[in-house]
Structure formats: C-alpha cells, structure tokens
Length: 256
Image (tube, rainbow, N blue to C red; front, side, top):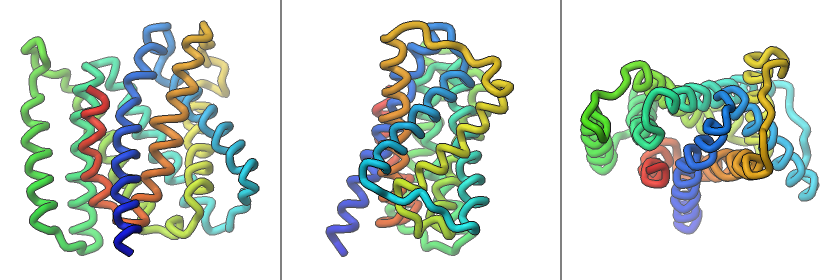
C-alpha cells in the first residue's frame, strides 16, 4: 500500500511538470500564425492518434459500457474547455504568469472535496493552500510593473475551475474504474470535437507551416497531453484528488 501511494506521488509530480510544458510548445505555433483553436485541434487529434496506436500495440480494448459514454463526453468537453481558456489567456498575458495563476486549481479542488464530499482537510493541506494563495496574490502585476490584464486573469481562473472539476469528477464518478489509457483516449476524442465545431468542421483550420512547427505540435500532444493526463489519472486513483492537485506546484515551475 505504501509503495502504491509513493507511486501515486511520483505520478502526480510527473503529471504537473509535464502539463507545465504547454507554453514551451504552444507559443512557437502562435508565433507561426496559428490561432488557439487550430493549435488545440492538432494537440488533441495527434494525442488521440498516438494514444490509440499505443493501445493497439498493447492490444487493449476500446470497448465502452453504455453508461460510461455520457460521463466521458462530459469529461472530454470539460478538459477541452479548460485548455481553450488557458490557451486564449496566452494571447492576453505572459504565458508563464498565466500558468502560475492556474495553480489556484488545487484550492478549488480542496474546497470542492471538503464541501461536496466532506473530505477532511489536514493542516498540511491548509498550509499548502495558504502558500498557493499568497504566491498567486504576488502576481497582480507583471514583470514590467503593469497590472495584469483582467480578461486574461478571468480566463485563467475559469480554466482552473474547469480543471478542478475534471480532477474531482475523475475520482468520484464511475470512470475511476476504467483503465487509465482508455479513460484518457476517450476524453481526448470527445474533447477534440469542441475544436471541430469551433473550426466549422475544420473549414477554418490553419495549416502547420513547417517541419519544425510539426515537432512542436507532436510534442504538445505527447508531453502536456498524453503524459500529463495518463499520469494524473494514475495519481488520482492512488492518492486522491486533493494531494494530486497540490502536487501541481511543479506545473508553474516548469512553465516559468
């Protein structure tokens, strides 16, 4: 049991650190002229292809129970909305600061678990939350002394809320019994549909202009998407939603 919990903490740390790589691969694509919807479309679709290929190689089943379809669709849309709000905030404020403010989501997870599921809040959790809030409050101004863009901050907070609900729902729904790879695969499939719709059936999809930009797109699909989601689901099952969320402290470190 102790070894499983230790493994959970390691998986949670990997999930947070890999999710913090979003700006590293997304910003070059922005610089090449792609909008948030196109960047996220490539991120999700490439992740679906790679994870699907891995499942085929391992001969894992793609079969779903009928009762799991709607929860998976909801989780996919929820995570996709969180991604979209975060990536849109990159257009309004520094990506490193946006990713740091996103760390408010552990506070939201802890509150949801305490109020909605009567989870006991330990002293360590309270201290962690206080430190998180204190650190975030220091970011009300950017590095040049200018006050942060209010619309950008609102987008990040809404992204954090969506991400927090996603983390809690994975732990508290029937989906917790699904194999990790299958859960992640279908969340990505349903999440990708958000961008298909927003891009008018891909009619507005922007092409990736160069091989180097394709490297960024593939890396965006692999590290902050597949690696992060698979390891996060594994961590949630072993140590719970709140500890996994608090380990998100590694995410802004990576992003900065």
